[in-house]
Image 1 (tube, rainbow, N blue to C red):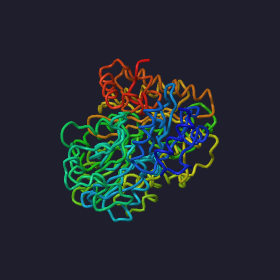
Image 2 (spheres, rainbow, N blue to C red):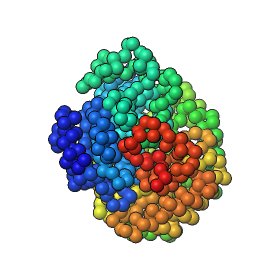
Image 3 (spheres, rainbow, N blue to C red):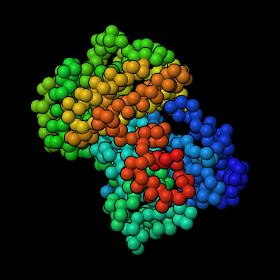
Image 4 (cartoon, rainbow, N blue to C red):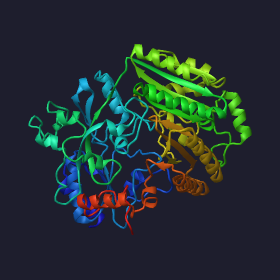
Length: 557
């Protein structure tokens, strides 16, 4: 079929979709092709659906016409990419942004059902307006990003439900198999539950919980094989609804900040964090350990200017360190607790963080945080401290764009970054992520920090290092590769940097937990047993390879 013929068939099969929601190549590429990697991705057409059942109709046409389908929730997967370029076939973007309904399952238990288009801001607002005593599972990606897609990508966030996929208790989805693509699928428990109206397609949330089984929503593992897990980091189906168990708003919240002014205290800091998680892990969100350069990127402007592809000199770093009283390493974490338990946790931290040069507790969400942090972190230019109170808001499930400022470190086209209106792809920011898992021990973490600091400057990339501690036995280190997207040399250097980090890192045991859309094709061995099994499952569920070809599913050419 030609593009025009495909569009005509979609209009016949899905008459409820407004004409303006179906666009051809030029508009589709302009709207959905931007990324933070390089040149825009070519897209043949895009369809914004308005009902979940339309997914099945699009898949039916795709099987017949032979085009590939790339589903998007909001399309804001900064630094990793949302659109996976296909082989020789036409590419259709299935935009699910209008699938943004929220349905209450059990308010008292924090069980809530979300469609893929529900954003962090929408959920946080819903919870506040309806007096839910629970927090939205937000991330630093910002208010416009999808809750469901982040969870399916195995993203994480700062509040107590740190692992967002673990918060998912049930899914609804479509598969592309020609004989089964017409209907929405769900768990065996929902199939058996006579109290569940499985045919419900409510415009608004209703008494039948939008067709979801309350029993299924409260029991993640279901009955029989755990099929829901197949749709995390995969191209095996298209999720149209997810039920999540939210973390409750704690009786007491307290953030803490620990400054280490000597690099040799790194080992003491990592040992402290491990000890803290072993003793008090049930009361903690994530704990970040950030190095000096990463802190500088939060509180100061790029001293080289945004149009230069060079790293900061030792002299520049020393000047900024003195001016803003920046530590060599900073620990930043959060405690979610009761009044009685909080006192004991704070005493534990004070007792075991004696190596620290400074220690601050925010004490409560009512504390004038900005004033206290002004005294603690910086001596000058207090207006730049907005980032820290906003970071604390994220810990409380209130999304904002403060973390996105990092993407603009080398973007000369945007002056005076305003945190209320940031779109890294539209603003032509260059951003890639290197996010390997690192064993939670001082030796390996030191080796990793040295590896990054020795590697990235070779390509003109700042070695911004953050260790995100999710448990006492492993950490995820997020290394942002920030560059000028309109500078061809910088783009080439950035990709070479990421390739080197990946290739050399795996030799040292540093394996990423997440890859961007390009790496999924080039860095995974289709001959490896895991991917052979994945491909067998793909052939069974999607024999025509319709959904997102090669997304976490490398194929031998």
